[in-house]
Image (cartoon, rainbow, N blue to C red; front, side, top):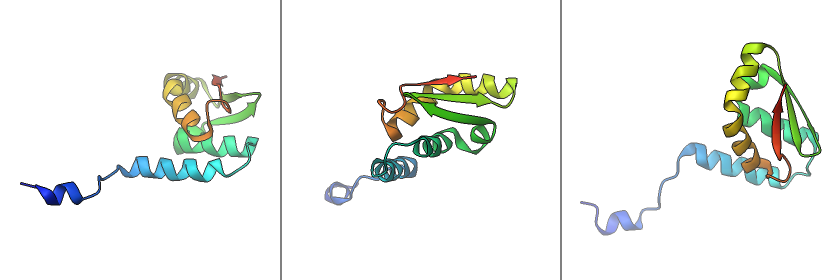
Length: 101
């Protein structure tokens, strides 16, 4: 099954991957600013975590203030993946680490 026809068909990418690449491309064209980092944070954190926190970016550090102890625990648990995703969008030199308060 497949044969030549499968080799000619372009590889399919996951929608999530394509969307992230498009977002990264859009952000690359924008100057680095607190607003850019805050926007990227909301994208990687998702609606619930973004609403449950406030963020402030300074000197390569994103400080995230949780709106309660339960949210603080969730943010701390998710910090490694959130850091990786955020750095993929804006660059590891822009956000070196995330501090959860």
